[in-house]
Image 1 (cartoon, rainbow, N blue to C red):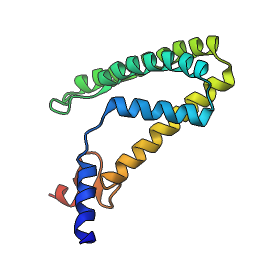
Image 2 (tube, rainbow, N blue to C red; image 1 turned 120 degrees about the horizontal axis):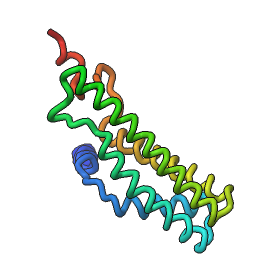
Image 3 (spheres, one colour; image 1 turned 180 degrees about the vertical axis):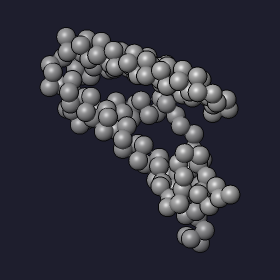
Length: 153
């Protein structure tokens, strides 16, 4: 009986939809607890952090290469590479702007802890999602999401 239930739970977890609001709340609670933030510090940090994250997401969307219509010619590839580079530069400028704003309202030690724990949370969740979806598999070609055995000619 237990053996039959375990795969069903695992499958249900794998098919679970991502909830951005739940993720944001969980991250917020994680950072507050790990960095030992006061209510005032949390309010100041997350006002700027949430705004920065929203703008980062908009930039991330620009860096995605359209999988349905990938660049084919050398000129299209060149353009895609330069566009991605410019978007990443925009991203760093955005982060610098917000980090400077955070440093104006909070001590550097608090900002550094919060940013560290935000990255740690993201890595932790990515690792959990990877494990939930089978993780790295030997013989798996991550470039096209097909097992290498299917790429033989």
